[in-house]
Length: 264
Image 1 (tube, rainbow, N blue to C red):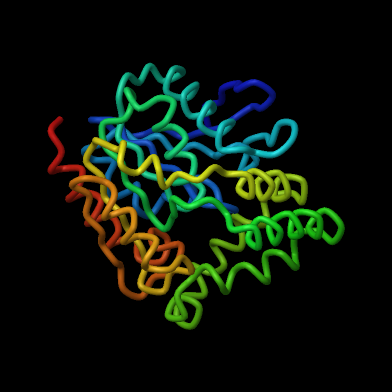
Image 2: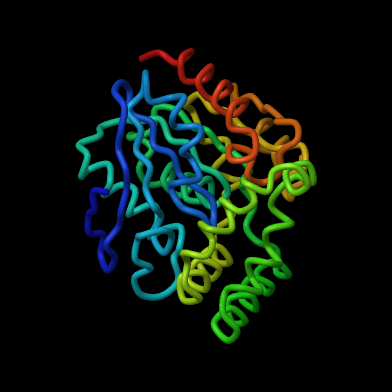
């Protein structure tokens, strides 16, 4: 995997395919392998960049919390490293959080957005407290309990019952993160800014995706659809918060249709 340096962290990514550039940003606490089933269906027509976000996969955490500002700066450096003027960006969960920050700072580099299984609102005080408590707990007790508690919340009951291979794939990615990595990301997500005011400024083609069993309420996705002009919302059946991993064929068809319809 190619690497680049961003401030205090060495970051890894994969690149493949040919055509217009699409950057695929994975959710917490997984890594770029999350996108492999979807990427295989896109690489015949698109050039794909799959980074391991700071503190995930093979990428360093650096010092302190992995804030959305740091992640957006990392992404800007990746674009510079790969000499990308403009690209299409797709983000799942934390990948979406960082794209709101990226849009605020580097919108001239964005030609279209896919916001999947994510939300624009900042954490509630309760949510922030829970994340910070979770960060402390994982530092004290290790990652096993955190992973065991988190996995069932992230996938559809259909996936949990019928697709142990997908559940184990996610577990394997999670197990690559250290307690320090998980804590840094939890602290960064807890501090993320409110991006609801940003929604009305988004002026590029935007696809919003959720799973019917997503842990994020449907109203959060309707809010994004209502505030981002011209955006459309698609709900994937038999999928939870990791829709692209749980239903990669449907997600890929949806994403490919959106990408193919863009002016290139």
